[in-house]
Amino acid sequence: MVVVAAAEIDALTAPALLSDIMAAAAAGYLEVIVDCAAVTFLGAAAVGALSEARRRLADIGVGLVVRSPTPRLVWMLDMFGLTELSEDTSLSCPLGDVVGIPSSTTVI
Image (cartoon, rainbow, N blue to C red; front, side, top):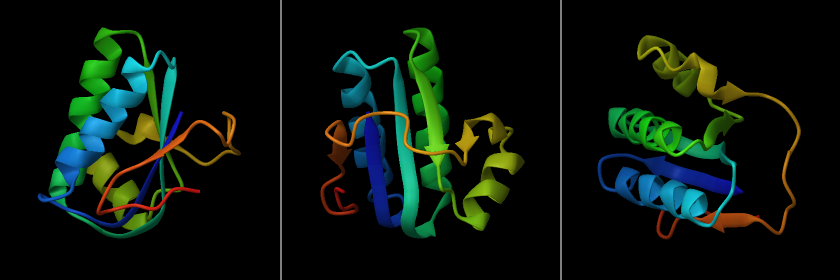
């Protein structure tokens, strides 16, 4: 499943990101992809949400991948030891399996 993040991911919107990632995992998907191509701002809370999601998903055997990270996000993932989350490949799940985050994202 793809969670499409857009606009600003900060302390106000990061909890919604984490919630949607966890909802995708609860739907039975073996991998959750967070598409960050349309993200315009990333706060530390975004990295915190991704780190927490990675920890929770690993506990239940679900993979987490960040697609199209901004240069700032790549730098932040590296600083927090999360570079393995970054992916720059083509879509690996059907477009019908897309969920957006209210107030901070758009759905493709």
